[in-house]
Picture 1 (tube, rainbow, N blue to C red):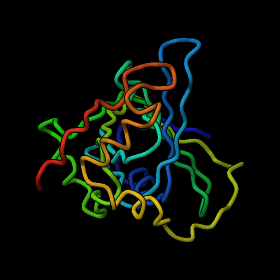
Picture 2 (cartoon, rainbow, N blue to C red; picture 1 turned 30 degrees about the vertical axis):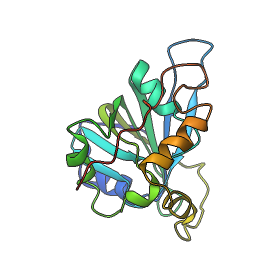
Picture 3 (cartoon, rainbow, N blue to C red; picture 1 turned 90 degrees about the horizontal axis):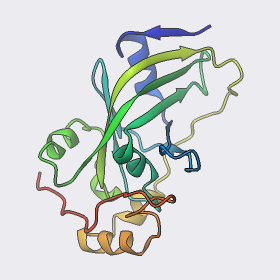
Length: 196
């Protein structure tokens, strides 16, 4: 039913790169802390960097729970499931970090995402995940659902923001600079977007 993989390549890599949506799960160390589970879309915003490292673009939003949890403990699980074709679920368990705009690695990482223009989405970080356990399972109970198209709402909403207005937007949100549980989230003020 389930198989463990040593690396992300071949059929496994093809499967995860073809999925239009994936999910991220993180949690703080506190037993009373809030577990976070987030869907991620936007075609082209996920990349396999090498056989043990994946990354995705972290866009503007109403909170920064994943960033806060990664800053505290680094634990993260990514999951893809087949809504079409043969049933399959793939999980990558590992440790991640948020690479922010003022990190010297940021421009090089953003270049790895050739299929998407991150500018309209209010890009705030690149999340890099180092895989420690890679597994698939059957996915027999996952329903068939048809992928229709990408939503353009996120890009339309954040395309009108520049660095200053995006920073002001983040500053007004309750759970950007600090998580729901009070952990440090996105560092503010937001560093400017590096020139490309």
